[in-house]
Length: 416
Image (cartoon, rainbow, N blue to C red; front, side):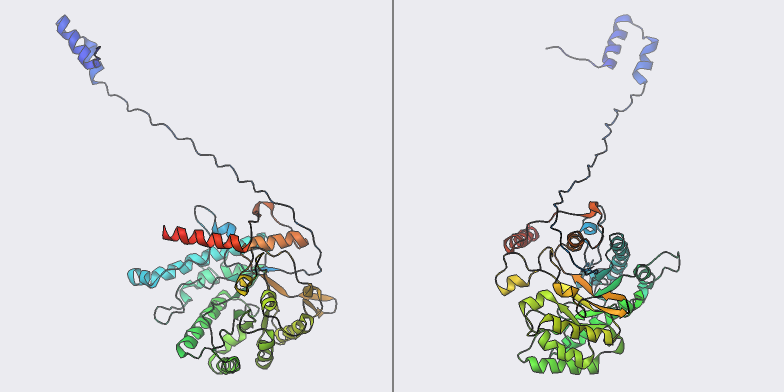
């Protein structure tokens, strides 16, 4: 076997053979050896994703206004490395461990991202959105709640550097900002603790809009809630609590919405007219739990209440998932909407004369799983506004079965 010797050993061998050391030997031995060069990784070239956007079936309408349930923007939410969204939250255990400032800092991050969301909407001609109720985690909690004065700069105006804040930007662009507290906000509940928590929640939502400087078109939408075994008594309790327990600030912004299970328009319109309390008409809910009169008769009555309070009417539109049969399946929203209601074109229902020759349209909020993509698709279908092609995403399969599979996959991931 042939053995290999290092250069140092070879030089020593030469010294033994010749009896003297070469003057070059020391230089050779002691010369520092440069470390091996590290291989430079080439920067990974990320090719832009090219989406296959299918053509849409063109339709016509005279309606000229549409909005978005934009608590989440799917494109901004998926942006990397820092997703943009307004619903960061935490648990009470986290507050106990890190203090309430942890939750308040999340509120600042949410509000900063709200500014970016408003700008994206303006760039894409969406000027009507719903703010996430989770903007400030636990702000309405009975024990850990806090005032929003600390976030005044982020909500209204940054006096330190004179840059735009969320409220100023929304007002600059003329965007309508609304809020929709969760299903547990029920002022007609027979339980005092539920009513108290609901009033705190409404006060918190009012505070968001007030700090942002949003005018009276910024409304807060709630459902009446459950019937608690007696619908008549519950509606009476709702009216009583509305009159006796709510502040004027809350009353100025509060509106109610017909739902698909407990209270349809027939139930709520008399309450709305008695209290001068605007009613948001939801087409999807009315399809599941229909009212008795034609919409062309009901909606003008509904809009009259809005006009009486000097607030622009708003309606909600969503579609059931394809293949929905049972009531529970019909309740779930489809990914997108492809048809606008014909009532939007009727005088008094979808529009009215604000002044001679000046037609004003109601605001229509789209409630769909694909969020902004549903609005952009309606823009394309009805040619309501130009769209930025790079912001379009392909529509995924939308059936009852596909959503159930997604839910099952999500549950599996959480367990993993």
